[in-house]
Length: 188
Image (cartoon, rainbow, N blue to C red):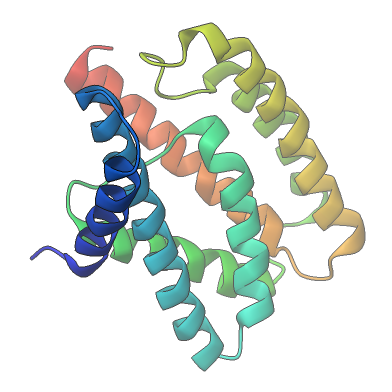
């Protein structure tokens, strides 16, 4: 089952943009793809915002979403082939981040170890997809090694729950999963 309404909307917007200027076929395809991605993510964001608002966890959802919004473009991560699977994985990731993060389950010494281990991991694996971003790999590694400890330390010192930390861990787990999947099945 495919969710198509945002694709139709994105294609109509793309048609309006493309018809008002001269673009090559490749540029038009990139515009269409970019708009579909934007509308897809906006759709997921709004849908999950409604769900977590019903659970009275709006602020927690926004915190978890901010972490994923910052780290996901740098690290890469899991990409589902199906929109419903993508929505389900997004919901599960957010639910784990929000509800496990509220429980404060990570002891203090593990939090410090996470700062070190995840910073090194981020500098090592970023970006997971390297075909199109080879020239910017160094920038992604520096960003991962800078943002990861900043987010983890912000959560450790200033935020009462561990939502940011759990979000960082789940984002890294999905990125490592995608990296292993790429290496094993695609021989990248």
